[in-house]
Amino acid sequence: MNDLHVRAGTPADLDAVLAFWKDAAEGTSISDDGDGVARLVARDPESLLLAELDGTLVGTVIAGFDGWRCHLYRLAVHPAYRRQGIGGTLLATAEERFRALGGRRGDAMVLDRNESAHHAWRAAGYAPEPQWSRWVKHLVD
Image (cartoon, rainbow, N blue to C red; front, side, top):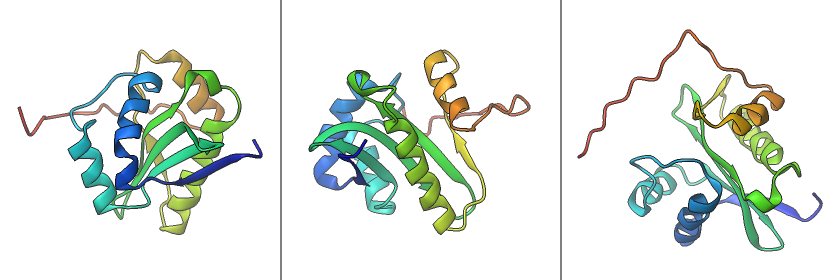
């Protein structure tokens, strides 16, 4: 995609990103709100990556690095733009960021029921690790 541009999201993008996720992402989590995403961008301004095509938001990924591990969240491509390499470009950009920060392994949160996402992640070289389970405790009601 020659006209595809990937950039870091800013606080000015947050409303558009949240609206985009309603159309393009599977499921939501407790931190998928303006405050949660604003904290992410304030803490790590390069972590929210946006893919734009002619100024239109067509994809996102959160590439968070905590100093030890590389975490990928919210890889989402607008349904009208899927299977055009946008997700792969976002992942490649995230992986470049991780390497530059000294990261050694990326992990992704992928819903078990989102089978189409499983194909995309496998195509990008990721695989589930069945020996691990995610244990979660919500810290707010």
